[in-house]
Length: 306
Ligand code: PBE
Image 1: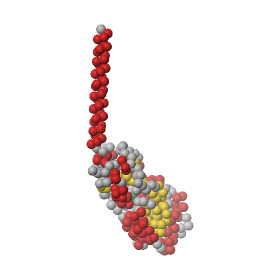
Image 2 (image 1 turned 90 degrees about the vertical axis):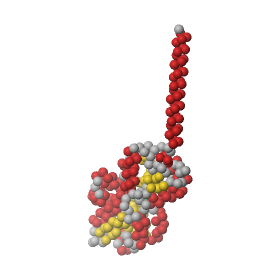
Image 3 (image 1 turned 180 degrees about the horizontal axis):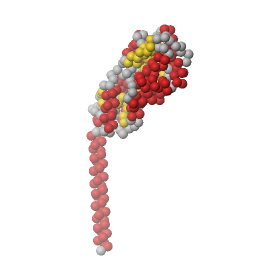
Image 4 (image 1 turned 90 degrees about the horizontal axis):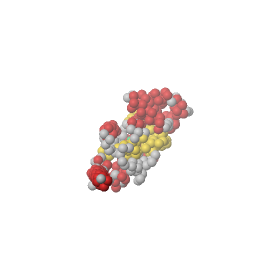
């Protein structure tokens, strides 16, 4: 009787073991199978979702594709910042993989705090970027008060972001939000206008780029300058045209130069043809960015297209 019970127990134990082995065996085979089928590189079709062709980050990403073996055969899809944001929304909604050209300050990181920059061991995208102000040659002599104010303008990442986020949240135009920011930040503004005399309708052209970051800075400065009596026009153009027009004197100044990496090509090209007034913001950054749910950390974890 006892022997029979023991036999039955052993039988069920063995059955259990066989069954467990079958299940775990199948499971790991399945996983291995799906891993092989779809790498991240394959899943994104060896494509980086980019922005405008005229952006510095577009040129920098073309360089990255040339420099990294892991990016051989990859495509940078160029369209617009809005189209890229729409692709990102779609991918995140479905938890699908996507690789974008991303930067700070930008509202993406407020809307999706779980985004990460891919490590860039070759430092193609550099480390910390600054945003610099440039003035045309002769502005200092022609419009000394404008030059002084532009030279004294600088603020923090948080200031710029607060305008971008508020515009995104409320739907109010950045120009309008910038005006409110100026009213709400009298101490910062006071430091910029220190020693600047009031003028009577002196015209100033600020050349800028179409991104929210530069629309924020340019509109803030425009509003402060108008309070001092300047008449300010903001012209949003491609990065190449920003540098060209400051170099040839068509534009008076810009607050939109991302350095030392993002706009290096243009900076070097026109280097001695403008006054570099130094940074107006520290702590900017560019790179390849992915949602945190993607199991990847470095550009070198990607794979060349076969
Ligand atoms: N950006 C935002 C621009 C500069 C500001 C990083 C997209 C670029 O030229 O790449």
